[in-house]
Length: 28
Image 1 (cartoon, one colour):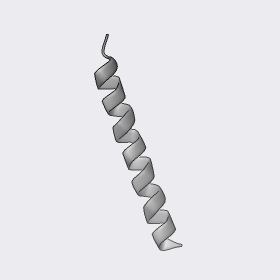
Image 2 (tube, one colour; image 1 turned 135 degrees about the vertical axis):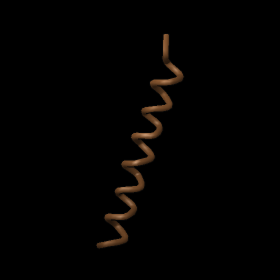
Image 3 (cartoon, helix red, strand yellow; image 1 turned 90 degrees about the vertical axis):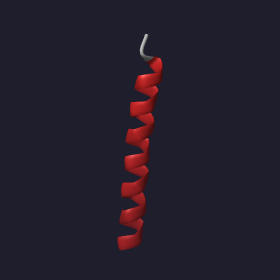
């Protein structure tokens, strides 16, 4: 089971999405 790795990837993806959302808000 590679749950920790999968969770890490999920967290990284969420972090990237959040950063993109913040940038979009800043631009707007």
